[in-house]
Image (cartoon, rainbow, N blue to C red):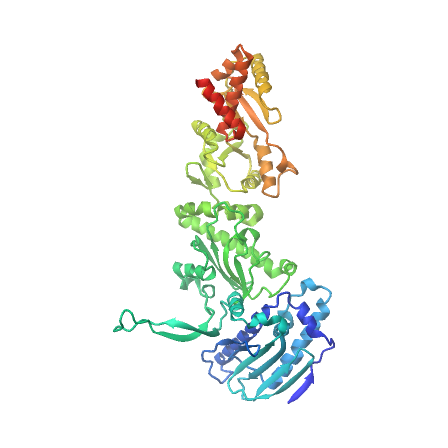
Length: 628
């Protein structure tokens, strides 16, 4: 038996490991199972190459909890170590790594993450254990070794009588970590970090029901048997070739990832690249509707089938964090700080690759099955519109497949829309005016007025529409967007022909004065205009610029500072050619004049959904009085 001191200058390295290495103590299990997996895969490689003259067989990794003995065992059937290798890898290499780590990071606690780079995974065991034992037998024909260390720099190393190949690590769990002796806690961790690891992981046994024999009576219980409880799926869908998977395989993998999710995904994107970096994965588009606040952090990041995190910000472009699925890349270092990731060259390349891949998939779906794409549009548009706003490259590609639906459920690409409306909706200054509504019911009368002129009205109702319109107006030439209730339709698309007014300029001024006496100046700007005599007498509109700036401020970003809190301002357009307006002008009594203005204004407000509460009650009472 040999005893020795781990060659380390820092006497209190173990408390430091405990403090610095991980904020999250639970990852010790992930690290130790990762090591066991590596040891098994190395053996597979050596046997395949003919370098190891042993049978690879069907190795598995086993986790055992000994609650009474306060021990946790991690057992593999991998490559194993000789006594010399334990001395080298456990006592020398890992500890020089620990020292290097401490030198580099003792002043920067928040960056204390780049564990893999220092070979420190094994020492995470000391975060939860007061003593650690390794019993290991190499695939080479050498005696087994037994290493013990109690968290001081002293260790013992002796031969052991283990006869089967592989390594067993025994953690003597410390008093402050007894949660890791609970089966339920270990099951949770295995499901979180090891659900898709490439070697089967056994944790206890489970009871399986067998089919009843043919001659069994109905009341006979079905036979059962105890089988190994394998907690992982070693060959998840993303590790296979897309050509080997059917639509149903992708759907069942989605259910495996999100057992509590009842809605099927709309479609998936299989990522598979090996140059200039390695990356595999499957992303799913869930049904999103107009919900911008959908739960993010549903994409899981893996490194060689080991779960790393579900905070993929910086790796996946932000607009795609609303998607679900898995990304696996050996090129993304484990346990790194966010700032490190965002500065990492490989990660930047991965982000732009994913953007391109998603754009290409959307484009091919659009080209190959447009009808289906149109049906799904309202469930995916939030992601696409957000992408068009936030990623220039995506914006350029999306021009081919981004859709602009109309209130009549027709879908145009931007180019198709332009071709379709340019004759009717180009104004006298040669600018193309694109009309849109955000709510078919609330803006019904305005939509009808536009359609009566032969104009097309889009239905754009997602929460970031005002930002998107701003972006489109600045990146395309001679176009502007106007919501149908932003002004009277003749003012939205100004043509050369002016409607002649039945009232003189003097009479128009008089009507304006009469109306201004009754309506609230702080809410309405009154304008008297000659319009079609069939148009409503009073029309309430909200200027496009003001409303859009307010909306942009309210949904974050853009807009003019402070506009989100400005009171609502409306234009009240009075149609000088409507006979009711002539009647208001010619009514002899002030009282009747006031009542007609009030009633007309309230009807206009009612059509905009602006008449509420006490004012609505008064309006109804007044209306009954008028028809008595």
